[in-house]
Amino acid sequence: MSTSADYFEAMYGASDDPYALRTRWYEERKRSLLLAALPHRRYRRAFEPGCGVGELTAALAARCDEVLASDLSPAAVRIARERCGALPNVRVVQHTLPADWPRGEDPFDLIVLSELGYFLEAPAMHALAQCCRQSLDAQGTLVACDWRPDFRERSLSTDEVHAVLAGLGLTRLLRHEEDDFLMQVWSCDGRSVAQRDGIR
Image 1 (cartoon, rainbow, N blue to C red):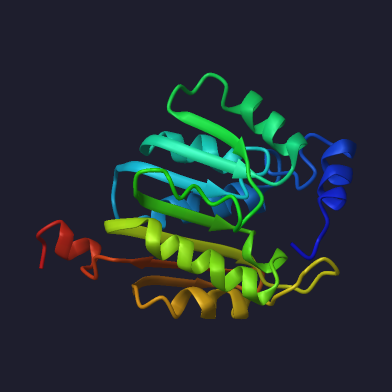
Image 2 (image 1 turned 60 degrees about the vertical axis):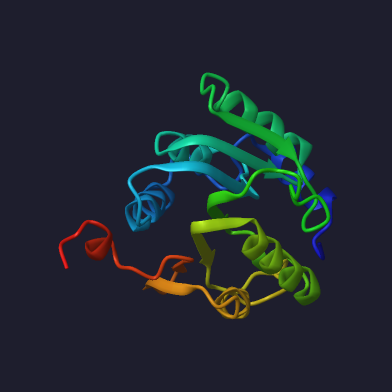
């Protein structure tokens, strides 16, 4: 990562919710949009790298049989473990990505990259994308949701991050674009939600 672990440790050292994920309407709304964008009602195994304090992790746990969440920051991992401590289907670990990608795990049918890719240099982002592709099962869903305005710690633009993921050859099911963020959903299964439900 181009942004040092010290940056994140300073952030989490100053606050147990430095991005106000628990209190900002912006963040609550974005989580709701992401959850609504998922093409399946239920998932078997989800992976959420860059989980931060675990607010999205907890929301995903209600839709998934198992959730593996990870973060670079030991402090974030500690906070996320506390947040999800009552959820037996959640496991939170410390990872430096892409080096620590859980290659030994069973395939995931959901991978969520939220506010993560733009902290990576281009080669690491390409490696992370390949990890996602290799770890998705035959019905897998890949979600990316990223802040659009520029900021000092950013290594890649949000458009660059999403272009790398779009290059994996998965079918795009959704693109939701606002001034603040871009969310896209891709799937190994190219059918729409209506087609999956037998409506068309």
